[in-house]
Length: 144
Ligand SMILES: [Zn+2]
Ligand SMILES: [Zn+2]
Ligand SMILES: [Zn+2]
Image (cartoon, rainbow, N blue to C red; front, side, top):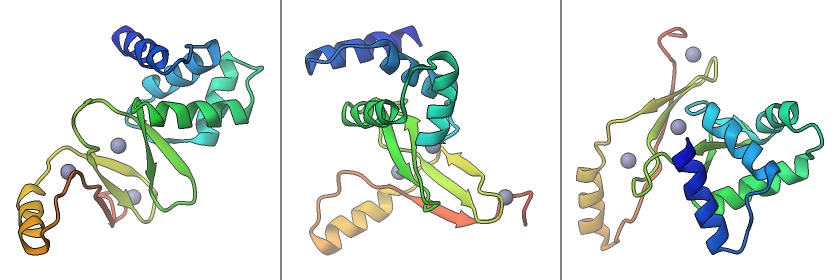
């Protein structure tokens, strides 16, 4: 976690930003809730507990900034809100998600079997793929 904060400090500094207490508090919440895919409002509610003076607009702008700096990624699960998660592997692309249509649970998938598909697309469409995002919709083990 300290390594992450140090890394963020450096990246902010490169771009001429400072690690303000509000930015630090927002990132702390995301780090503490790794794997939970929190929405902007959920993050705001949690940050407010430690930082009562913070406003939703500040949290919103901080999330956008952290996204721009590739510290976090914005994800859209088609549930009407923007969600964020920590970028754990710096060079890796985002892992894939299983989304339950009944309870809304989101399960992270670590296996990536997309190389063959990418190869085929690159060959058939003469398209150089740099990344992909995959979401699977269905029913989790509890909801089947
Ligand atoms: Zn479910
Ligand atoms: Zn995830
Ligand atoms: Zn993948």
